[in-house]
Amino acid sequence: MLATAGPVPEGPQWRYEFKWDGVRAVVVVDAGQATAFSRNDLDITSGYPELSALPDQLRGRPVVLDGELVALDAAGRPSFPLLQDRMHVRNPAPALVQRVPVSFYIFDVLHLDGASTLALPYEQRRALLDGLHLPRLPGLADTPGPAVADGPGGARTLVADAGPGGGGGAVGYVPRRFTDGPGTVAAARAFALEGVVAKLADSTYRPAERSKSWIKHAFVDTIEVVIIGHRPGRGRRAGTIGSLLVAIPAADGTLHFAGGVGTGFTDADLRHLQQALAGLRRATPPVSGVPREQSRDATWIEPVVVGEVAYRTLTPDRQLRHAAWRGVRPDKTPPPAPAAQPAPSPPSPEEVTGSLQTADGAWRVDIVRHHGIGWYRLIHGNSVVDRLQLPDLQQLLHAAGVDLADLTDTRAA
Image (cartoon, rainbow, N blue to C red; front, side, top):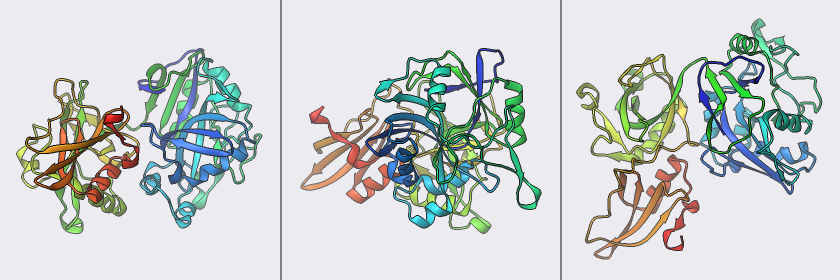
């Protein structure tokens, strides 16, 4: 279930939660194991070994939990830029896990002890979640406002809650909910959190639906973009990426050029982007309307990698102003191409000897032969990357958050 963006509503029918700056995940705990799935239904369990502690925390109870994977900064606040160090690693080394530990902030329960809870109202689901006796963190007083301590240099720091369950060695936490909307907003702003989510107390859980029963309000506007190219760096960034060229989708899924993003990158971001985009080059821009001053030195990229940017304004013609990079979103995929623009047919006289695709049909891999020579063709919407060898194919799919092993033979469908 997804929230709709909007102003924070008020009224006795609403409950309020803090908006955590992390990655959404659904975690299934059963038979002593925890399995995590991203918002686009990818199995991300191996990337977060901390989740193996959840079955013990839950004392063996089978449950399906919805929440946010977060990495905390020195002040105890979830930091999406910090989480980037973990999002791209499938089997993190112990040193990385220790340097950037990840917690699971749980805000809903979808299945418990063999029974679905989807039809229960929000308040009842939260009561069931409280009954699991997981620790509450960050610590919160009875009124909206995190408990604080003096951190390094006198900085205010979020601290652990003293509620049931304790916090030592735990990975799963249940942040509290509130009835005071303005107070929750004020507390979130005071501690530089991402925002607030308001939820109707009687709302049921509707999987995969973007609902107005949940309203999210971020203090900094962010938007998901599709990378379509990059321009060369100069000065300290010479030899690497200077800025990204990005597009955003219209309601029908058509991508429209939205401008460039040249700030917000760490050195690690630039290294990762250069590696991830190296195998995605194409000769022409994947969208129209790119101004000449931005296109003349651009390297064009297949539009398959989704990122997130913060921005100050979005102009009426949907151009981003003062945009800053926040990170790649491997848990997201570009929107499907409009129905009126079907995927290109494989060119003749090549022979397609086999075809694989994802469960939703968004990604297809054709196995092609011509005059005794074989290769792979990757198709996503209107984008086609041709004449790939297996290592290149795997690299492109991995950059888009897709595992080749998850594709199935279309003839078996």
